[in-house]
Image 1: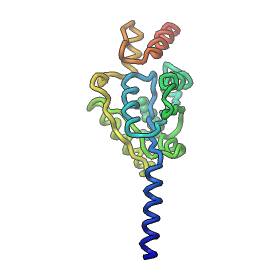
Image 2 (image 1 turned 120 degrees about the vertical axis):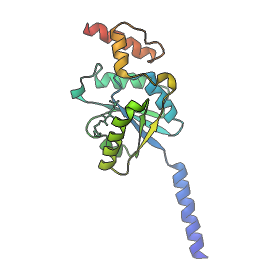
Image 3 (image 1 turned 90 degrees about the vertical axis):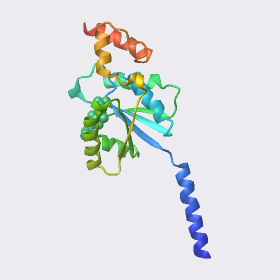
Image 4 (image 1 turned 30 degrees about the vertical axis):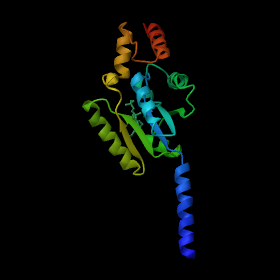
Length: 182
Ligand code: PNS
């Protein structure tokens, strides 16, 4: 009887802890710049997770169009009213960033079959580095399945319209930055 009561109490405590545990995920990327495809994935992720940390890669080798600070700021501005989103810059290994932020889930968007090989390699390498971290793939709306930050930069550079493809603020920043470089 004593034993049963102790087990019941422990089960109640564990269930309570699980129910109250924050479901947190990390959504990493270059975000140079963030597109509506990324925003779509984040909004879908918020249906599953209580909190999403958007991890912006700080990689001097990649020579991004926007500085890390600008990329972080742009994303913060887009999600200004969304308290469940946090935006942070990171360098080094993604698995280390995930662990340091007490998360175990990484979200990645999968647009088409062409993304698969790169994502497959990256996921298995991350698993090799830290088997406690799982990667969750999410598909964006079909209307964004062709969209990429690189294409967005190219179209912007050539004067094409980005309406509906990136948040308005990002489009303005793209135009300014392209004027700066020309
Ligand atoms: O938006 P991207 O450029 O496809 O994102 C790639 C990203 C940032 C997820 C990836 O380059 C990354 O995780 N970089 C951190 C370095 C790392 O952990 N490398 C080893 C895992 S493959």
